[in-house]
Length: 198
Ligand SMILES: [Zn+2]
Image 1 (cartoon, helix red, strand yellow):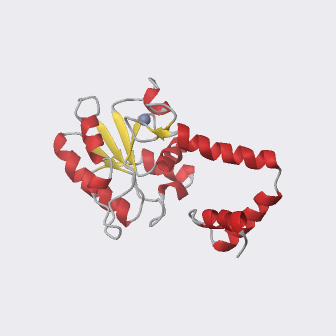
Image 2 (cartoon, rainbow, N blue to C red; image 1 turned 30 degrees about the vertical axis):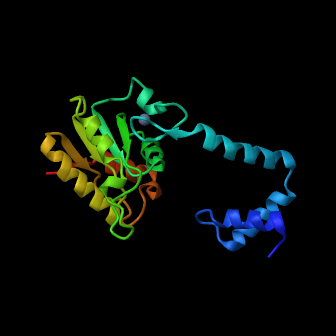
């Protein structure tokens, strides 16, 4: 246990995901020894990300404006929406360069363990988007794990009666993991080999 500010810093760092007590201590002492300008830049970036970054009004992706870069891009096909769990999944799909449509970020998945249901996700916002008749295909690109499967099944049941083509990524993704852990080639293949949900 250290005094005052050093211990506060270790405690704060230790609350971050994936940072254990040892790493928190190591990062804290790294910052203590670092150039003041570097630490100031980090502090300013933390403040800026909270002040300036918000979620896209349309798709829920992170954005610095009301609408994100992808939703604002007129070259993106408005007829196809790829549904993902988190903003980091948008980046994973973008890296494959297989997709030229738009996204919908749910903000999580249906989870029996955490008790997270569809009401906690941006499902209603998705249904509103599907009502203007522009969208013809929905690609369910939730994570290849139990929660992701449950979420995709739920959405497919909800949306299929609306007469849209609903597809799922082809198998071949590492099962049990996150979409973001799949390499670009594997994810790209899963994308181009997507199958219609009957
Ligand atoms: Zn957007």
